[in-house]
Length: 165
Length: 169
Image (cartoon, rainbow over all chains, first blue to last red; front, side, top):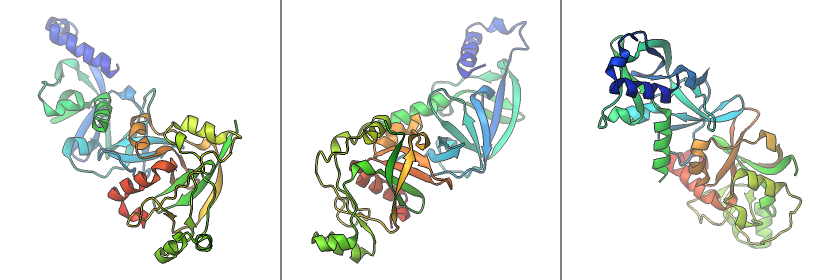
């Protein structure tokens, strides 16, 4: 399930709560990863590859949440430093989630690749308009006592465009 | 269209600059500058930055185009000196920023296959093109190499200096 489909499903459920009755097994899979204490999730199908221990090449003139570039199989991938976006400070990373994107080359730096989980959609909620966490996320859920934010890569890249002005 | 392009490679601590050779008339050593009486040679010698690289830019009009058209232009057989305008950059921006490219390390002329050059990731393209980076490559040892548009080289170096001053010494 892609993130857009996932959001559409959630919205449909919000509009038609009865829809879930009899469909209690309706769930979605999430790929959970960490950057320090920050836990985030992505739909697994958005992750193309996990690579480790690559050097991050710093770049000039980019916003602080762009950590730089990695050389993945000879091709440059922009590395997002999500800790800067969510916690306003850098955090060292040693793993990279290379994202599956048609027209771009983007990776996310992280410290841990946790697990892939099935979460009932009834336990996944969208954000209120004024929730600051919702700026870069499409949803949130609780898992083993942690609040996991479902990252929206499109929102982050949109922020990058806006920041350029 | 040729399948490769000649570039001047200038190595720094963290990255290499690749300057497409078709953009430049030639390189002069500090001694050459001294002999020509330009005053640039003595400046270079004072700074202890040898060799001095004097760059005569062939044509400024295509400096802000994409990597594809930029590469295509450089790959053409037409190497005529069209503009004849002389632009000389200086890395050490504490000196006059529009004069002289002073490099501590030696520069080399390399032949790069277009197949080995890389486009900037789409999400960063506008950011990096704004400071003159039009493409990139990785060296055999994995070092990042930035293909730089000559007209914007001073801006790039100033911008970089703001964030990583050590790379410009």
